[in-house]
Length: 89
Image (cartoon, rainbow, N blue to C red; front, side, top):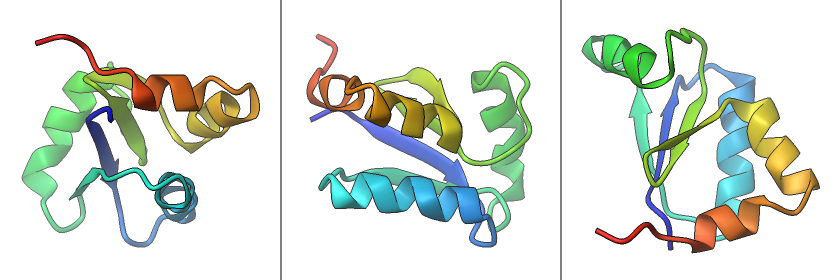
């Protein structure tokens, strides 16, 4: 299974939606709440190409984008393949 990291905020409905999809698929993920850990926001912005909104989602280190991009991957049937593929170390 791929390594998934979600930068989020507990008050963000898009974060809740994205995490709900991942949980429904049985995907374990590391969540970094930037409201609770504001020092991590610059890290998120750097990894996400300057994006400041949440969620920002990474699968095996690849920036997927936010909730809309995650949902688009799901609707086109490409999310499962990303989640199952693990890059060789």
